[in-house]
Length: 273
Ligand SMILES: C[S@@+](CC[C@H](N)C(=O)[O-])C[C@H]1O[C@@H](n2cnc3c(N)ncnc32)[C@H](O)[C@@H]1O
Image (cartoon, rainbow, N blue to C red; front, side, top):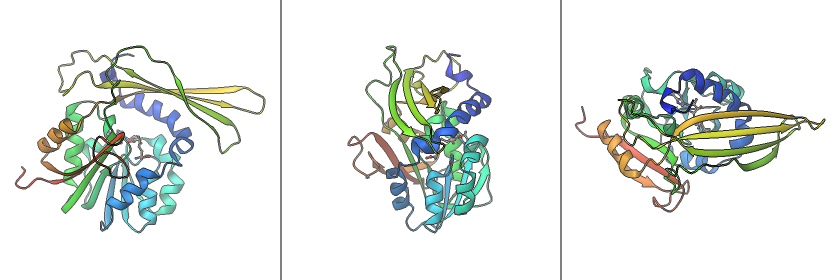
């Protein structure tokens, strides 16, 4: 399949089942974004994470004393973090973040680690922002963390898999992760895509080598919205009745442009319908 807009929730779950198996080995030791969210959550009693995954960030927030609800549509991702989510006391909801309806409001709502980039179409992005806004308490804040545009995001040149890491897994096997980002051509779909070319196919390949030397290879390929600029995000927020109040460029909360992340803090816009 080459057209990312034909991507279905079944395709997504199949890819996430592979990713979930190695998610903690891949991202479990990453703490800088967790520290950032902990800092931004200071003073917020109730926190909602949209796209909670295996609970890497949510569990830390819950352990720090916040009342945390985490929402995700992926059974595989939630299963992979079930014990951590349960033991830390995160309230887990399996649902699509584009049409979320909870009977609760939160002082902080956030999309962590590039979750927002899983929303490919403008209508998906606006629907998810609508869900976020609908769950903000009075004076609540929304935080979105995503990958900053890269110079080669829209480069159609063929790419090759590159080794990202080699690590020992919990079952004693050596695992090598290789990854690749390929520019995806999106055909005219008659649907609202703000920048129709800014979708990439991401491939993750995991090779796990057992004692006998045999290699077990698993592959996940999924589409991601890339090249999402500050300007485009500002427009989306405005359209969703939200107002950006702060922008950052790294998990250390540097200025935009000084790192490889973009982070926005937004509030409900006054008088928004
Ligand atoms: C990059 S992972 C991030 C997981 C976690 N926030 C972290 O930082 O480790 C993105 C997560 O968003 C979830 N997701 C993507 N689109 C979704 C949707 N429409 N509704 C609910 N969850 C979604 C995926 O299932 C996945 O668990």
